[in-house]
Image (cartoon, rainbow, N blue to C red; front, side):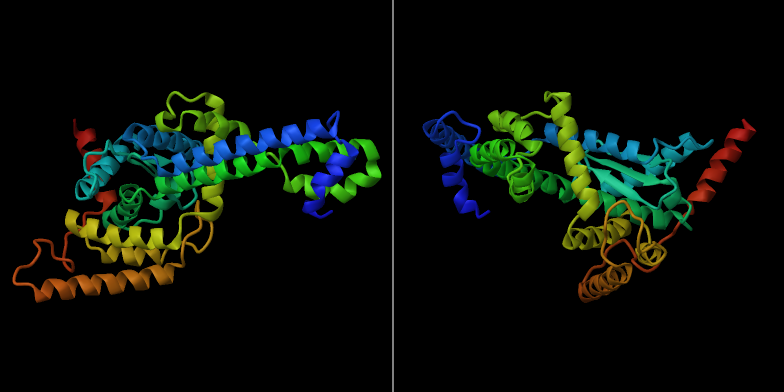
Length: 346
């Protein structure tokens, strides 16, 4: 059935409405509401997300990552591990463009090889990833990559786009609502035989779960506070956003940018950037929490970037205090062993 025929068919058959005039009235109301929602979507797109919302949203994302990762590690040395992890992570974050964020680093029980982050300063690595590390510098590279995603607000930008896209979808669905109701009436009137012929069209006009969610969010879009939103709204946003993010991942440009920032953060913190470049070669091509560009492509871009940094440094009259080729690397395992030995002697 052609969509252009929906109006006359619905009107002629009076499907779902008492009279044709009632259908036309309902259509006018839905179009008026659609126009209001389109305006609300424009406001939503132009708003600036406050730090409070960023932190609250990041906390909700962090809770989901912990849940997805089987909870925080219960390893016998989990306290020492988290102390060391936060020491390394906060040292790197101090070199970033957002050193004052309340950074939090944690280890997940998952045996998968994953590192994830949430807006506001939440970074997690899995036990499976730690098992692949040969030294602290490799861990520093992984943490620096996630820190870069946060400082560049990659997930926050995707969150904003997601809300706007869903808002627009809800607005479009609102404009088609009378036709959808009419088609439902048509199916009930003509029986099962007609159901197959209009089923596809009914699906295309689906109102969707975000109709109610976005209606509430956009009523007070400028003052939207995720902390004050109902639990059902927060759950709907988190479920839909993270499902979408885990399916498609961040853009390739975002991943490349986070890599380039990562090696610079490493150098600023006193780690050899090459350790991260080589570690990328150890990562599996599949099985990460979200899709990523190919490891070889990432390594190639990083090698080129480091060469360019060295060339720039050589052309200057002064040099950075950080030597990109010879920086001391302290293995994480040695640090933990030393801590255990010290505890045993006391």
